[in-house]
Image 1 (tube, one colour):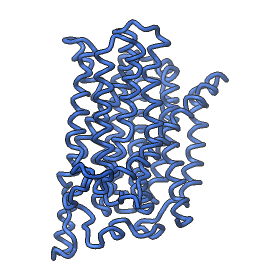
Image 2: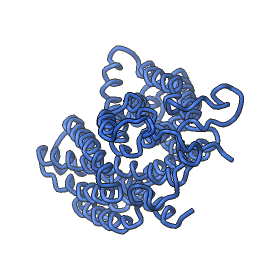
Image 3: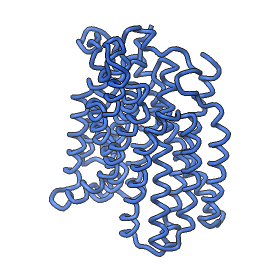
Image 4: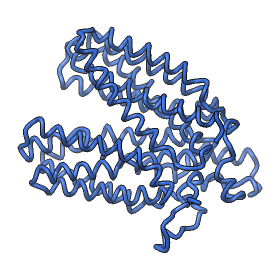
Length: 432
């Protein structure tokens, strides 16, 4: 493996960890920032929608920019923007300035999210095997580091401005230091992609005809200007899966506390079990995807998640409920990375744009979880509302074949005659 490709992978890890660290540091400072701005929990809840709106705007903005100028250029700028944005909430003195600060932070986060995933697609194409899930695990690790570092900094009695300002400087230094290792556009730092390795005449995307079809360059450009229906299908699944993740983030602890009557410390274990399973699962998913294929990861992962959440919802036992939340996290862990990977590999020249569509709708799902589950609790018990994400997991499992490019025939796993599934993505060849 070329040294430049290995360095590009390490740099991508650095940006994923940085993104998780920056957002985690904002989260641990929320109580102090809320107090400084003089707002209530309810007002903060509304202001967090501006964070989401900024992130969505950043995702849609940076996708085409990454395609045009290359992730090597856009990723460091996005990381710098996100790093600078993290200090702004610390300066906010009222509801208006905090709202503006959160929109700016969300904008930087959205830009970094899509651009670093676009670069991760480029790295994965060079490696010719799945590596995306490990990057997403790095984001989770960044959040853990933020919790530890934030707790230490808060114990020193520093102000939010001082803490977040230090974090911003660290983020800017990381953005600059890691930038030279990023891969150039067009694969000049990486070997030939696995499309050429497996089937030289295979199309780059199921929705974009090969050059041999006789289409002019202008006609092909017009086709790429319109997002393929398959990408919107992937985006819809991302919305469902990330809504499920949002449900665990917002309601898992409340489920044990309010429904099962668990002590506060025990209730907190529900989210801890879910997030730990997510992180470990993502560290292992790439090997599973390389062996069995992305279709299998999504199909059986979503099925396991549905089983886990259904068990947690129906159980009256705290240990069994914790096992259910753990299985829910483990099942979901590899699903979103497979969707991002499939979107990025569908059209190499439009990877950033396609990832922005999938990530954008997925983020909407993450935000929609509280808005949907909360009102439903007014008409039914909390544990019953969980069968909505159970249904979404079932839909994801049933439609997992969308990960397979349209022109790729089913492999032995899909027909029940073997143990491999190489048809999930051009970058996911069968093991040799």
